[in-house]
Amino acid sequence: MMMMMMMGERKAAHGRDDDVSAASVVAGAFHMHAPTHCDNKQIDVAINSALQWNQLRNPPKSLSTEGQALIGDLRNVMEQAKTLLLTKNEGNLLQDFIWQTQHLDQGNAGSLNAPLDRNTAKQHGNQALEGLRTLGELLITNGQFRKLLSDATVLLRDIAGDAAQKAANRVNPSEDSLQHLDEAAPDNTWHEKPDLSRDTLRQQVQSRMPVGKKDLQDVAGDATQQAHPSGERDPQRAAETAANDAQQGTDSSYDAQGGAKAGLQSLKNKINANASDEQKQQLDNHKQTAKEYRDRTNNYFKTKMPKERREQIIFRLKKMVVEIQGHQDCKLPVISTVRPQC
Image (tube, rainbow, N blue to C red; front, top):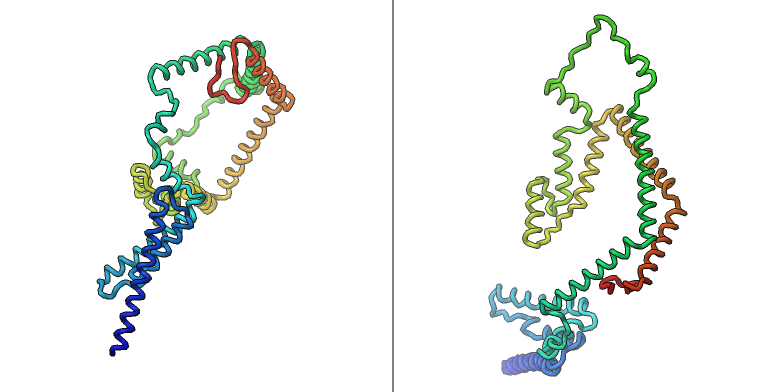
């Protein structure tokens, strides 16, 4: 019995010695480098030594369940903090920032040459305004600028003339219509009265639409479900979540872009499933017409602005800048235009 008691005392003394040794390492590391700052390696050694404390590795059984859980959480926090510091603090930036702020005094701050008074700021503003005014005067009096402006006006007039001619060709009636202009309608000819009631108009619109109200609600639900982090299908609740994020600065992982893509894909699927063959053909015709119109527009502007003309315009713009910079009233840097000295 005495032997067991002596072994227990030796074990307890050995544990205390380990705790004292670990505490000494941590305290020594912080006291040694407190005037300057510890690097990441030293902080790693200190935290590892602290994690070796017997009280943290093996919480006493005399503690309650909550107390033991608290010690376990503390150990996890220390390990996560060590990992975060070692992975995100490359170059000891955090320690250097703390050290620099501790050694910042009034003398350092007073050495900054910043125009804080109102008169100096107003003077700089007047100088910038005067520089912009002089630059504008040089622009409107420069021959290259005026020639470019004149050429742009001519080109726009040419484009407007083409558009007016094309519009006139569409507006002008055909020769056949003009030949029958003075003819009367056949005798006793009557046409059916058009049905313009609300129900008839609604049916006509619905018959031409490949999707209905229920389909649009399903599309909105699919988009909301994809965007909402918890899969909510109610658009109103999703809007409230997005509004709360904007007001409180929180991030609930609301994926608006993903929701828009999902809604667009769902709408395409609904159209393909509900549209008749005639409606699908009409949609294809509209797409083809839009593509042809886009291609004609691009080709038209290519004929009006060929590659040689674009390159010549760029060259003339560069020449205009060089002439303005060489003028005696303006000293404009070639690269930096933040503060022109005109």
